[in-house]
Image (cartoon, rainbow, N blue to C red; front, side, top):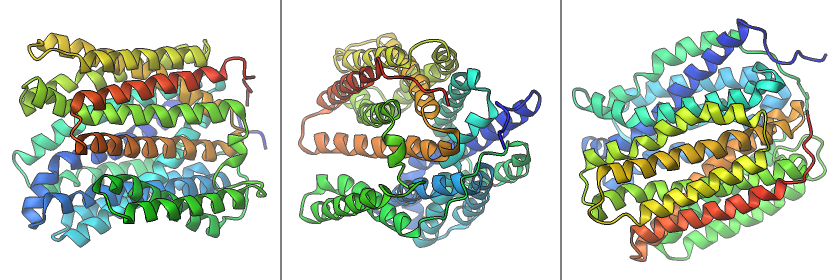
Length: 448
């Protein structure tokens, strides 16, 4: 049965509100934990290095289950996977909230990562069914606005809660929001079902390949042979996974979508851009404090224009992407993003707060100019019944890029190169991503 082109008003507004509420819950949770790590380490009596596993456990669970859950969404419906993700995430938040030991907290974080994967794996696919085709870019822009705003509010919310309560209460917010979101999923639209059999073998290979890849990249900076063994096993598993997918009509790793030139270029651009983003974003707080002499509080305020402008420009960029070439918009955004990073890296030691703030604002605005058109291009170039696979690749590119970018910054710091080379590395990768984006010029744009 051919489904309608988007939901009618006011059903569309209820569906949008449900997606926004769920994204706020998930994104805020992901950003508040970073701020609380020192407090968690002190309360549980663990080292700072060990406390990192509170974040790593979440990220590993997220990256290893994104594509399998996206595949399940193609077969059984995106609304069902979205609801399952909310339920798992909410229940896991209760475990994290009541944890009195590191193993229990890590268990809660692993389950929260799986729940978040259920949400992120089909979030973009659902947007494709909520909005009419002519408004898809606008919908993606609103998504970018919500994610940027929630990311900006996370650290402030965490600092506020920690000023009068224990870190356990950071996870309490997700519980009532999750219950409301779960009931609100009745407003989400149905989707085209492929009814393919789930490939458990490929899901296992996917987990091994991506899990060891992320671990290997993160551990290379520490030296030794173990990270290289992890990367070697990840490579073998990845090759085996790709070969297994080539003959399947609905592959878990969407190699069928990567055969579509526009989709492949957009996916490559997305991965490179997130590497550039995180390489600079991790280095900038150190640059502001160690080079420009700002305090931790001042650094927080000076970083705020970045997500703030991303949120403001995101919907505008989405509107433009419905009317203009994604190749030009993406290349322009990434070029300006590289320029902003270069300008930030060259700030003199006596730079004023205004000098820092407008450069941060340029970085946030230019990032938004790129993001919505690129995400729209990925989704529109995939068949509607493969929206789950496209959404899974979009999420995987983001997580892989962010993890790789953070590892690159750690590698640069480890070799004593300082903050400026790390920021300039991000700028160079952004320029490369802009070049990749331009490859789509002249590529036919399918309207699916």
